[in-house]
Amino acid sequence: MESFKKYPATSFLLTLTTLVFLAMQILYFGRATETLTVFNFGGMYGDVVIQMPNQLWRLITPIFVHIGWEHFLFNSLTLYFVGQMAESIWGSWKFLLLYLLAGIMGNIFTLFFTPSVVAAGASTSLFGMFGAIAVLGYFGRNPYLKQLGRNYQALIAINLLFNLFMPSVSIAGHLGGMIGGVILGVILPSQTEKQAFKTSQRLEALLLYLGLALVLLFLAFSRRFL
Image (cartoon, rainbow, N blue to C red; front, side, top):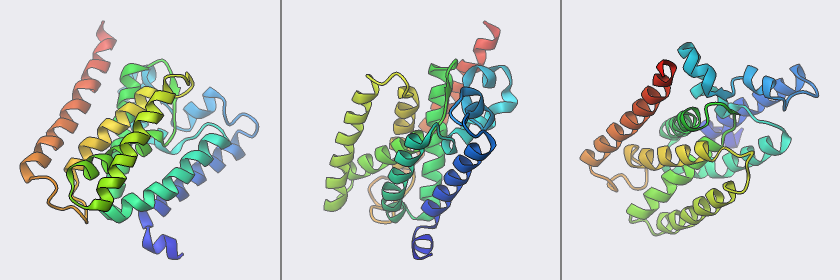
């Protein structure tokens, strides 16, 4: 209860992620990692979304869907530790916005670059947190955040490098989440580095996020007519 009071957004996200995962195990016992199960629970499948725009809700739901215990435990532990850190930096509501919007950008990248693959996982949002912390540390003045930012820059590089040799991992989603997180790290004022970016820079970053998302979606949906 103490952790929930101190980090309500992280606790809420962990609880929701856990409930979705347990529901998958109960309803599809022994078949929870199958592609159809992941799709039925809200996994991203770009080709379906492109053909049926009413499936755009899949830009959000894959964040909470995981494929197997290892996938779930690794992402949940990362969310627990990094999420609490990010929530203390941005505050609960802005952290929640960062987590969801970074995940959405990651899923837009997945839809656009790998539309024929069923993908899911919180990694899009987690890479967004890495990116946001890295950019804030790079441009901020707080010594602790600057060191933290350097650590996360190295972590992003190492993870993306490993992704190249792991065909089962959605590098498009990770890259999109990271790019989204970097942009959101500029848009969302942190509690510790409120003056890191000017208002004009935040506005430009907001327009960049919206423009990138809309252009990728427009190009993806235009494939229906080719």
